[in-house]
Length: 202
Figure 1 (tube, one colour):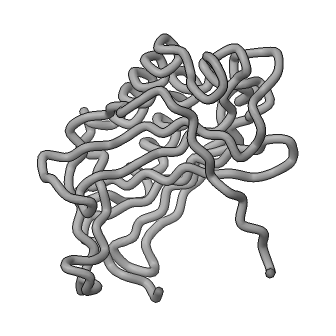
Figure 2: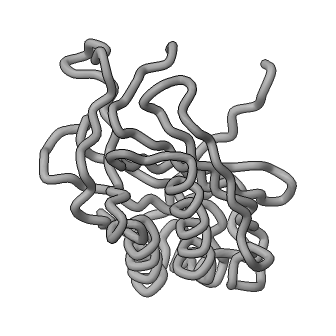
């Protein structure tokens, strides 16, 4: 798909490495009047929040490398980058569940429907968090939900509003992307999920 302009839109890539393999979570934000200076300040804030509020619950095999924040209103919008202040490694030692294993956290808006819901598949689940064969403990799920909630809303005081990006309506590509503000971070169950790796250049 070609570039789709999204008014006041920004995309934040949370960039990790796990066992030599890069992986990423993507968030979207609405920010009226954002520019390179305010974007860099928020990018610094977001990487610090992710390192402080999310990484402590994940395996030390998972390393937070950086956050990349790009404007998506025009193809020439600013792109900024910020590494973590520390090592970026997760806070839980010991064994880690396999690379394709993830835990899903849901992002809800005030509207219903698939266009207005989002999901984050979080990698680096520590073995210590597993309960039984394919579930995580209630404590791990709760800690991760609260940590992600704190992190994604870290810029709300400066009007960086986390949002779900909808590109289509009724199966038809919108002329511009639509951002709907996130109102809640939740979990629907404590079952482990899987995200398959897509090999490049196939």
